[in-house]
Amino acid sequence: MNDRSRSLRIELRQWRQFVALAEELHFGRAAARLHMTQPPLTQAIAALEAALGVRLFDRTQRSVQITPAGAALLPAVRELLARAQALPELARAAAAGELGRLRLAFVSTVGFELLPRWVRAFREQWPQVALELIEATGDVQLELLARGEVDAGFLLHSPGFTAPGVAHALIASEPLVVALPESHPLAREERPALKHLLDEPLVIFPRRILPSLFDAIFALYNTAGRVPQVAQEAIQMQTIVNLVSAGLGMAWVPQSVRQFQRPGVVYRSVVWPRGRAVPACETSLVWRADAVSPALAHFIGFAQEPPRCAAARVAAPRGG
Image 1 (cartoon, one colour):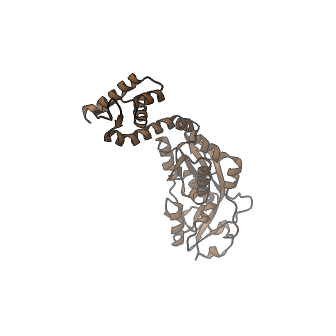
Image 2: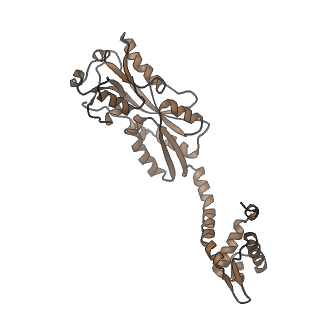
Image 3: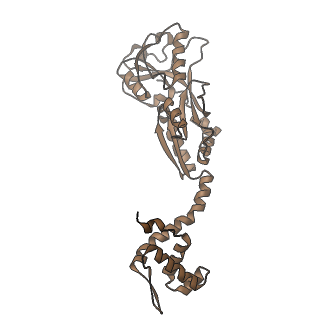
């Protein structure tokens, strides 16, 4: 950067004066348009040319003509002024949450059904809010929230669980179902009994990414006096289902995972012992209460809108 670039302090007022003279090509008419007298305008244009080190107008006693340098500069100056004029409205829109950016993290189960529908609906309602979607496991989401790298996240967890240090809103609740290899004898049953599943090899996610749901699944076995036979761990639900299709074992998955149709896998609801409630999992929207932008406030309200929440809850499927 040269010394001249460092010293340039040109105000929008000077650029408006430049455009007025470029369009009028007459100091008197330009001054009248700007509601000023001619001598201050003449001085202002001379000061602008001196600051730029470029002659913008050729003047004679009879005429004013814009120079090639001035003509080349004019479109960019017009764009600058248009942008400057739009700034107050942009500021008001941003303050009202009608403009901005939202960085949303989500677990893969939300992406099967809930998230696509919500993204479409939210974009229709708030078209100038840009949504940046980041797929991440629950443990990673909480780290991103703590560092301010996402604005909110969709977490999967066991019923009633709340993550520490974040605000939350329940979005959906759904039962757990079992994913079985299609070739497994239990896959031929419409609703296999729990007691027939507890000794099967288990494909499950690591505890660190979904501790509450991991513990809830293990509690199923402990209540029945069994110890889960973990055959393989995998992070993403799609990977878990793929491993089931390879015959490595069975898996407990949220009902919404039925949307992921993988050859070689069937999903089954389970017959539970009398008096035992069907285990469920929940999805919550989480965010930092001390970092709620106007756009995020709109999204939180959107997420908690009762009619939309009711529509978002996963209906019990028929058949396998």
